[in-house]
Image 1 (tube, rainbow, N blue to C red):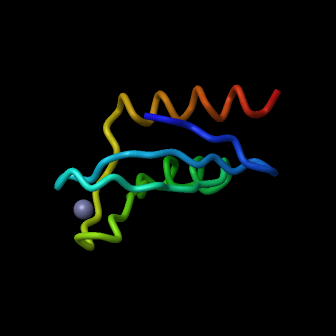
Image 2: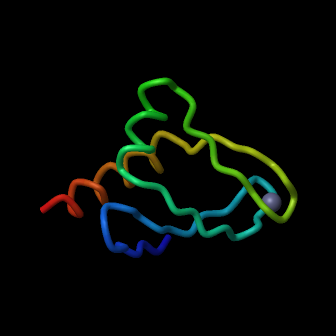
Length: 71
Ligand SMILES: [Zn+2]
């Protein structure tokens, strides 16, 4: 997975949906935290119109990236 830190506090990263379509997802730290708190973090695939929830491992990696970004 590749991560790109964007201006402001948005993080852009690549991930695959359950049908193996590579998607580039952009999320801000606020959106990420709010979604985690309400247990509604869902990614969307534009290719097959599927929604999926990231794994615990993926969430942990995103957390790490956001923590890095805040320095
Ligand atoms: Zn897909």
